[in-house]
Image 1 (tube, one colour):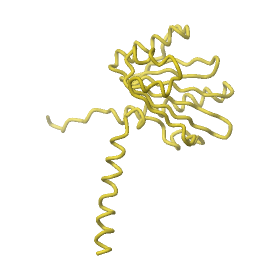
Image 2 (spheres, helix red, strand yellow):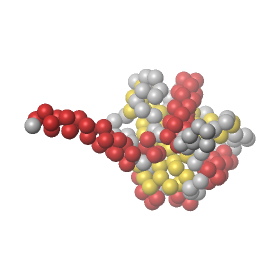
Image 3 (cartoon, rainbow, N blue to C red):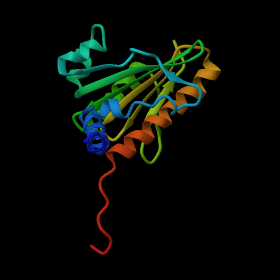
Image 4 (cartoon, rainbow, N blue to C red):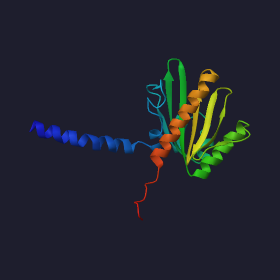
Length: 181
């Protein structure tokens, strides 16, 4: 009997874990894991999530600018390496157009002349008052902010930006159609 219970528990564990993961909002799923950027771990207790007016849990004042511009939900997490801290905030938007328009809003606020564009990402980086990346992949608007020296921070912000981009693309990739159809 004990053996049967163990087998049943072992068989159900992956299904329960998968159900819990799929219940996690996508904006949380695209946040980097602790090993996504070498040397960085997740700051314990730093995960914040908000949807609709609960985005105020992330933005202490002024959250309406986000909801009025099409933010549906957002997740923020802090990462650390020794005394270096990086903050990643991912926002799901109502549409790809809303995400790009919001990026352009911030581009104007920071007085950035042009966006850097790749096949899957548009964005910009500012270095004052801290090194910060603003970028869009699909309908996801993300910021990555490093709170330490500019030279080292620029490399780390780029690494976190790439890590988030890869996770978004992996988790939002449309299913491929069967060959021959």
